Image (cartoon, rainbow, N blue to C red):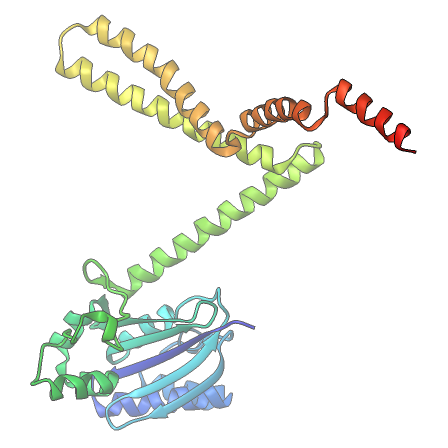
Length: 310
């Protein structure tokens, strides 16, 4: 069974917050929610349901002098621990590094968080250079041996950087907004999947193929694309050039021609040229058939010769 392995490096604002966070997670991992709640209250009343997901398994909690290390596994379609990070940032967490190994594809990905925001790897270490030796020990040794090169440098680029698989945002984004965006994306994907399932069921009841329904949707989308382009063309030309009725008439023509063109192109992309290939194959077969048959005279002569031989 495929699963995602998560490793969370949690850096707190002070040693007291670190110790409280350690006690909360150690009791949660042990299944002692009563003691976990006790220390969560001391941490500032953190919600245990937000800190710990019931879907996590193979949990391990270890406390280092500088940070808390939390490891757990999830299913391949489960969410990232963004809710836990959002809650922790509201209760004494300063920064964090999340590493996820996707067993299904055999790839590793890292995300860096600082002051309640998802930030780039470069920005994280510019703000917290002291944590590089903790979260990237191999990289720290290699850069030290090369004369102390930059934070993101590697001999031949990220290909040889063991920590170059960082997933970086275009600009810093709050964990709360990131979690909201991820939830909306997941909801839209589920709604799209459910809509297709409903369409397939409806078409199955009516005796139609779901594939035909999908093709109809693609053709409609192609037609809408052509119509939209015709409208944009008409609006731009009417506003920028003289000859209102000329451009309006041309726009109406395009409103008919472009959707038909895109729908025909989409139809050809879906079906290909199977019909033409079959027709050509049939003609070639008809042309080659006579070549394989001997002429009537030769066949007769051969037959007579065989009789004479006997």
